[in-house]
Image 1 (cartoon, rainbow, N blue to C red):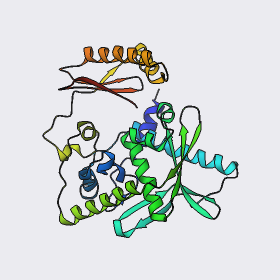
Image 2: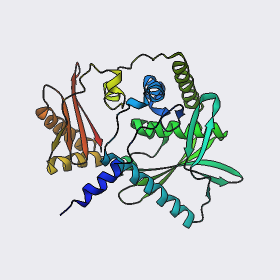
Image 3: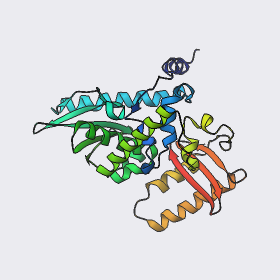
Image 4: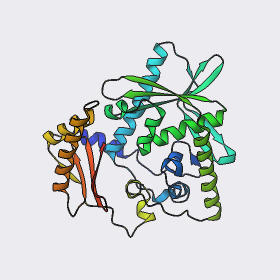
Length: 302
């Protein structure tokens, strides 16, 4: 019998392509802002080397499409509740900084239209974001923060709204954003620097953050001579996955939390190869590295 899933994945693969980029996209600027741990060089590559950008796979395309479906579902829920969200997916252009973008929508209150960004996310990520500072935990959530700040600056508005959705249970969370002028200035200076490098046909200095570089879609042209870690290892270990989940869900039991982390770290260290680990266990991606401070472990939810 034919695999229906393979047919779906094959169709998703047809949607994957490289799109010419001659502007600074609001959704991507956060990855380049140094004050957010970003790489200015990546922002220049986005403009000058988009043809060489690494493409994602069909399974990742499923994630992107699911995010779009979740956004439409949230908008439908808001409409059913009588919440006015206008100008959905409205395009904008800021000539001075060569910034383009599409805002998810705007909420009107007391005659003011506030930009609204809808983001769906894994339950653990959802639970971990309650304040604006929490958005700084991950590269992609830092990009969300820069994105909405740019929308506010472009519109001349001092507030914006994030609506977050838990992909697992549909829970919703609203976080109101007050305009951070320092972050806004950093974003605009980043765009100016990118524009200058593009005009001069130059490249900024490379950064030295290995974790950021390893996930950059331009790493192969930026540092082609570099080896990007050990091959990915897929592990089938439900018990270890459950232990990681237990650790991530511990909130107030500090002693228990530390004890679980010791067990997790030791297990990762014993399975590392030459002091390095690149492993997927269930829904967790585990990266282990060794440096002058010893063996460190980072766990991300896929």
